[in-house]
Length: 207
Ligand code: FE
Ligand code: ZN
Ligand code: FE
Image 1 (spheres, rainbow, N blue to C red):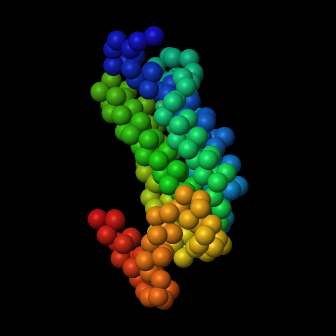
Image 2: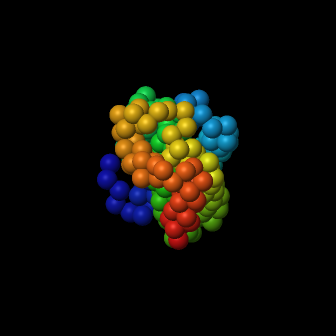
Image 3: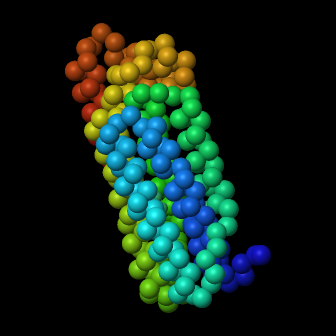
């Protein structure tokens, strides 16, 4: 059914978001289980609980417009989750954690885009209650994304860079060539120097 009005498009987008969140409630426990870092595991588990509340909020939004609660296959998140699955199968240790964060942040950015649009549509349609509910979820998705960045920058990516838990040959053989390559370029400089380089790189990338 093609949407011919903003109201109909709003409903279509709600269904997409609803399906996406349902998929994430299945994917997040698997990602948490695979993660090595305690901090990452707990961030993913916390976001699973938030995701369950986000589903309830979407159900409330459906009610404000008198539409049945229904999902419509979200190809975007399905693809992002699918990509994450291959990392879980192929990688291990801190490089796996770095890959889990990379995948989880893709999902958060997708959701930030979706909820930003939905909250704005609700505003345009004069649905104050829906706007507030969707805005709350938007804020949670942004916070989840920032939390993942913090974990990546504080520990996980540096551990992956140092090759913790895996030897270099394995790193290179498993498609983590960029990280293994960065590690190789710091050979001979000693660990402290490599970490300082990593910190300045992290600072640059936040600008
Ligand atoms: Fe969500
Ligand atoms: Zn989608
Ligand atoms: Fe999310």
